[in-house]
Length: 148
Ligand SMILES: CC(C)(COP(=O)(O)OP(=O)(O)OC[C@H]1O[C@@H](n2cnc3c(N)ncnc32)[C@H](O)[C@@H]1OP(=O)(O)O)[C@@H](O)C(=O)NCCC(=O)NCCS
Image 1 (tube, helix red, strand yellow):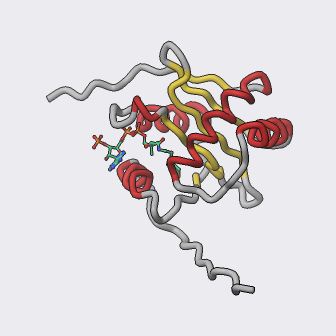
Image 2 (cartoon, rainbow, N blue to C red; image 1 turned 30 degrees about the vertical axis):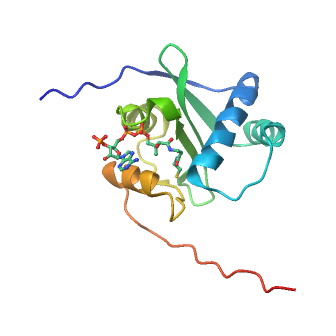
Image 3 (tube, protein in one colour; image 1 turned 135 degrees about the vertical axis):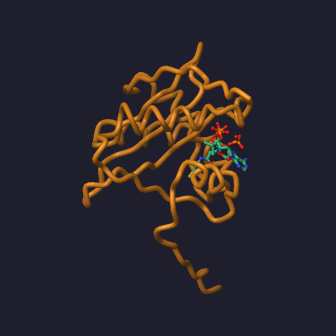
């Protein structure tokens, strides 16, 4: 059986892409089941701030954007992959795997360790990262606030 690798190209996003990135970020928050309540407009402002600071975003394209990633180098010199998202209707076709391969081999310095957080309930993403070779490294614990 031959496995077809999707052909995608990438480019760094700029402030001109902030609206698109915010839309995709909003979908990412919904899909991963995150508690973040920010609107698309608020996410757009945050995206602009982040891109002006030390975050970098990459858009992956076929005819149009199919995926994006957002990352920065943390204080420990590791690449913190904050966002990684493939369009809903295009999942399970190898796009995520190929986008990450490009990110790893062409975007992020090869000598850098990559870290990311994944929500425990996000079983799809956990299976995805495991399939790509990521291993559990730390677990975040939380205690609910005391009621009033
Ligand atoms: C996680 C995500 C990026 C995967 O993208 P994708 O393009 O569907 O992934 P691929 O098709 O390249 O999958 C590669 C492998 O990962 C695993 N995988 C991907 N999605 C999976 C799922 N829903 N369930 C189980 N395994 C899965 C499989 O092993 C898959 O290989 P296979 O299809 O040959 O079985 C995508 O589902 C997504 O954008 N989810 C919402 C955002 C998100 O949760 N991002 C990560 C936050 S930490």
